Amino acid sequence: MEPVSKKKVSLVTEISKEFTFEAAHRLPNVPPGHKCSRVHGHSYRIEITVRGPVDPHFGWIVDFSELNAAWQSLHAQLDHRLLNDVEGLENPTSELLAAWVYERLSFPNFPAARVVKLRVSETCTSQCTVYPAEG
Ligand SMILES: Nc1nc2c(c(=O)[nH]1)N=C([C@H](O)[C@H](O)COP(=O)(O)OP(=O)(O)OP(=O)(O)O)CN2
Ligand SMILES: [Zn+2]
Image (cartoon, rainbow, N blue to C red; front, side, top):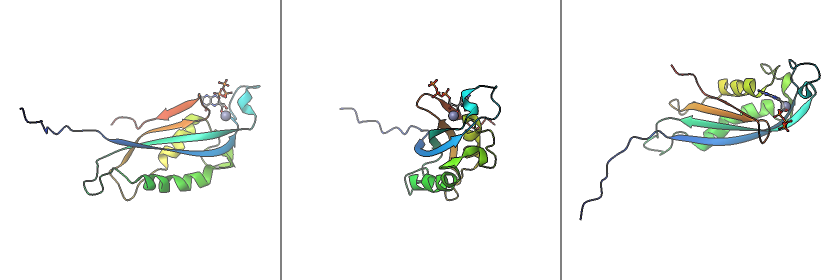
């Protein structure tokens, strides 16, 4: 009988975690009469995907609880707020919110871990995804 091959494949590994917050917003630059010019609320979902080397000792890219810790200070700034009042979110579209969150995430204990995808869902059917540009 042939021995089973133990060939090592090189893998790209990602982990993801989803967070939620509740907030109100209005979009100040929409045309007159647009429904989003009025203050309204969303149950936002933020999915964060991290890529990096799997630490040989821990066996993970980054502890899920470190993602949790990184998210907590952002959650405190966003949850049950009028997003327009948050510095940098004066025009709180999904696109600009995704960039705002992306720019503020870091994992000090796992510096090799990189956020490679961040998705904001405003509703069940409306999402925005950002990725770091190549290069
Ligand atoms: N490109 C974007 N378009 C819109 C954004 C945005 O952030 N980026 N935001 C809005 C509003 O916030 C709106 O609340 C969400 O839009 P929409 O999907 O139209 O919401 P509805 O639940 O009303 O959608 P229906 O599928 O029509 O029920 C608008 N556009
Ligand atoms: Zn909205």
